[in-house]
Image 1 (cartoon, one colour):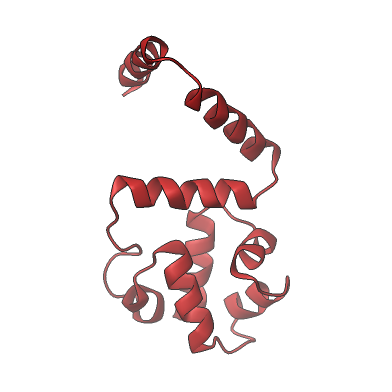
Image 2: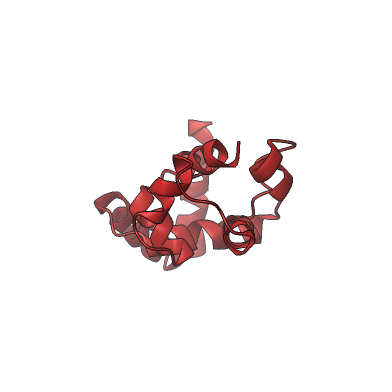
Length: 121
């Protein structure tokens, strides 16, 4: 069960096995071995996955409850920025640049941007 849930989590986060390993500080092939059940997953690794990605431990191990522990907006934003900063894809570079530019907008332009985003919903 945990093997499939690790794969589901990684795919939900749109991370490659390499990126997932890097974020967790694991050897590159470790995630592949865990997902295929060829490697026992230590309690330390379970704790690291849960704390790093705010994953519900009961979901990870037993497939019970929601994948993620409910978070406030600050924690969600912090997590997403950490994920983006750990990756080096061209899409993430675009997001990094957009985030940088967003942080430098004045209040008038932020209001205009909010109106545009609201029109997409």
